[in-house]
Image (cartoon, rainbow, N blue to C red; front, side):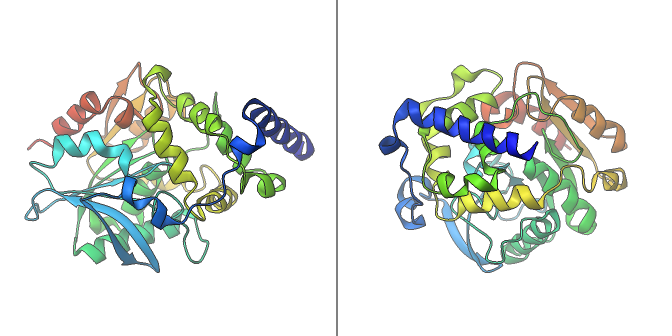
Length: 314
């Protein structure tokens, strides 16, 4: 079975390379300094946290007693929340961060991408910013980190917003090709130096309910931030360290006000998992957007943030 998986991965990469040519697909790591001008303009900042220069944005009124902290998913970045932040920052302090292994923050110095390592990172970000408690929101991996942070640091989270969150074991209907290849160790010598842009476009389109919404600028962002030095190796390590559903039994411990948002066309983590969260977290609300995919906050920020604003209203 493992041999078949490797063979399938090699075939997928060969097909991709045949379509664009090796020269066009040649894509070595890029130093973070070459990416900051485009992807870290103001109000971006870099803070020394947990041995990394962490890329974050901290916007809105500083006297907000309950800031909102936003956590992105696998291979994404803080930019996925642009629409939500635009709608929230006039009234609320909104903090977003590139998590270890992704975006401009890049790899963790100790190579630890387990779920407890990510929750410690979240607590460290809050400490660095002098924030005692937050409304914690996350998409996909970020959603999994969000609810696990609520379990591990219960006094530091006042409310939860889980957007197509990880947490339970699941069977995906469609997995982005980039995720598939990152899980095959035998392909590392190739995937660390070759990255067809078309493969990134295919991966992004696969997580949208309406792939026609995927623009060249959006593909640029995912493509260039994937090339940030160390991110591809970190993705490979994360998949090997992160069994799906490992801490699922802890979800029932959560007693916080919780909003669960799901895209009805999510083919990566099925909508049934949203129902599962609603059942396991007493009193939680579930909002399903039938036409959206795995990243509904990015695909339709206006409609999804409206659900958030209603949830947060006094």
